[in-house]
Picture 1 (tube, each protein chain N blue to C red):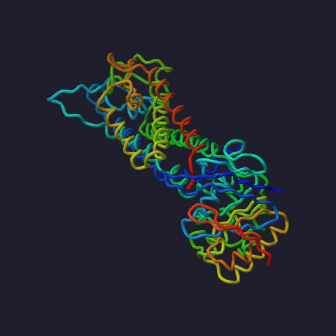
Picture 2 (cartoon, rainbow over the protein chains, first blue to last red):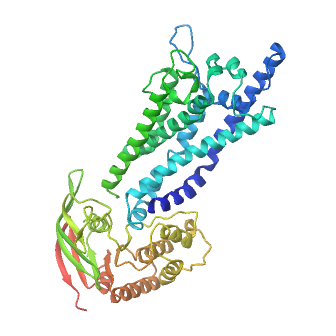
Picture 3 (tube, rainbow over the protein chains, first blue to last red):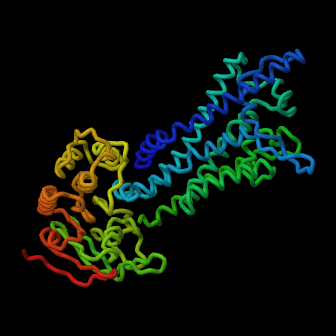
Length: 275
Length: 216
């Protein structure tokens, strides 16, 4: 019960403080949607065959990340900037509130409600909810822009996305799209944000945020199962490309990081001196 | 009715001994004063009583229940430890309401009463960031006493207060003690502390070096 009271307070204060950061997913989503619209119009003009695409096509384009990168002396590594800014926007959205709330109000907050673990439980729920809101805002912005651009109001993807992004996308079922493009990226972002919030207390929020950025950069460069950022890019999935990653390992890794951060954080705050 | 018993309490931080084998006992209806220089260990002792720090050795018993073993925080406690910290964008009333919402049994009436007791207007629309130092201090005291907890811990409560406010706060604390509350006050000012306290513990380098019963 006290956890829910803390959660209510954190939603009220945390989201209020960082609400302006929701402009990041909105801007990126609109920009990516307009980008997709331009490409689809060009294809329509030159190849004739293609339609306007569906809302899901727009979403998949926005969440694509980058294809599997292979080191090549002749090829430059280019970070997928929209994807990167989207992810670090979510990391920044959740980076400082928990730490500052503890530093500024810890003494009062640990005495008045008479519960240490509830404070951390509330922060964890807040972090998870913030990521959900972040993605929801992005989906709404993409959906809105897609409809404005004349997309078919459907949650099924069309052949157009395989023509523009990745051939393998055509063969994905609705459930697989749900897993790869919605569930897995959300769980991955949640896990990274939770771990970041916990590490902020062990080291500092600045270092913790920098570590999150590093994980995303490394994830774009190396397609390996242990770099969680990979699972926030559906086109790196084994369901889409031959040498991609198994999404189940993404679910397990994300679930483990979420549980680890929550559990270790709880133990940490039960024993932490509030000075 | 509350009783605090501290047995052989030791607190080390990075191998520095902050509290060194503290033993004391406190009971309801009494105001206890803690006296000592800066860094003597007064605030750390208060933190230990509030459950904010974990003892390195020894134990703090609240009504025979050991802190951090049987209970996490004393079940009925209010505290002002060092500088009060509140949300700058909210009024005093809003700040206390937000904190009260995290607790049980503190009504809006309790909050208004606590604010009036310390001389703040519950209807004041000024935000905390516009409060003077004295008003901030009063809000910290109001937070500690709202809902009238059994144990009230106040670290330098009369800092930054004008003379008139000091008299008001002193009278309120004496009234609360008469109503059976256990009050612990740390204060630099020897005279103020002697006026307020029934018993004074003098702390030096983490030790209790003297206990003085105030007969006046």
